[in-house]
Length: 315
Image (cartoon, rainbow, N blue to C red):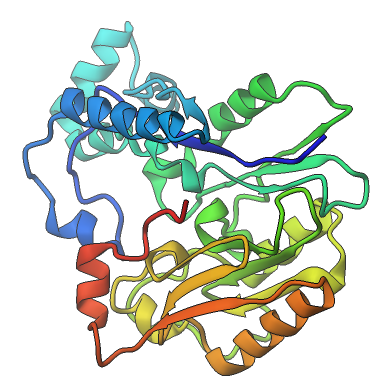
């Protein structure tokens, strides 16, 4: 059977709003208190999914999660009927209610990290749901996301599901937004490139202004859980300077598909070394890296962040 890739999008939920909840995400901050249109956003998302399906791509969808998340409101001291809980939170803690009404699970790239069966030693597809512990409004997602993934991929002969990593800063994990897979055919062994923002143990370089959400320790843990071949793994640090300029995830500054890596000149720390290692690992598998680097003198990092040029999809 020929292997193939399936694209999944998250459907925008009815409580989608611009609350500026994501510190370090300048788009989130700059759009704070703008008027949202969840109905239109959901339609636009569905139209994008249908466009890919009409082009012949295999397309799936993640349903929105329950919001407001009343169960969490109860955990932090609100009581009564569900309506009572929401009314109390609106009166005394509207910012908490906003966080627990966020439709952020629509960002499917943060749902989990996936390794295909061609890369794992046991020949199964591995999922590790992201703990998203950097932000309160996102840290509540993984319990439902894990159940959703297990329901969508239930056969343990083919799929292995891992719980979220320990919910501490050392293992901060933001999912596939910091993960690339580079190689040839989807059913052939490829190189998995994990991008991290900070190394907690014996780390030297880290951003000074904004948080580094993905840690090296989390990337290493996922590679072990997914039973990946050490020869076909690359750990690369995102440049701390660009994180401090609003590049909160790798997918804001780089995107890949099969042999192609499309990225900014300052995407990675020690970038020349990273690209040489990646190219060599791909050659070891009989593949050639197609490296497309956008120079800083052609586009500023501010324009990269504002335009989301790289936060895109290569078809």
